[in-house]
Image 1 (cartoon, rainbow, N blue to C red):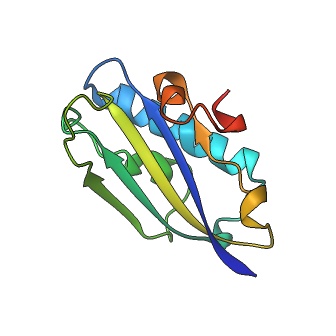
Image 2: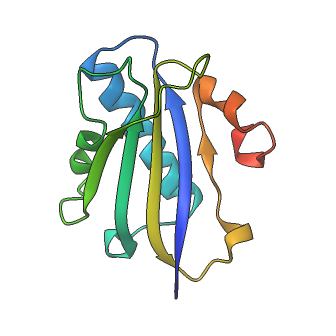
Length: 123
């Protein structure tokens, strides 16, 4: 089995805790579903980032709510690049998987679909 990285991103309309947690939960559930991850023992760790305009909640709280209580989780801030997409939450999930890199499905939801229009999963 190999270690693979799965990327994803989504956006919220405002810096409100409930919106951040709901969007992060939706994104994590979709990453898990599309990559057929059913056992959290296969999840090594997850890094969550937010743009500097999101400060009211930790998006990792959504993973804990899903039951990822033994998975190491980390929240960080994205680099504030001028004119970058606002109110964006990103996840980098590290997993053990038999899948080849080309079989990993990265997930971009809501406005974040514009970040990776080249990916099938961003459609």
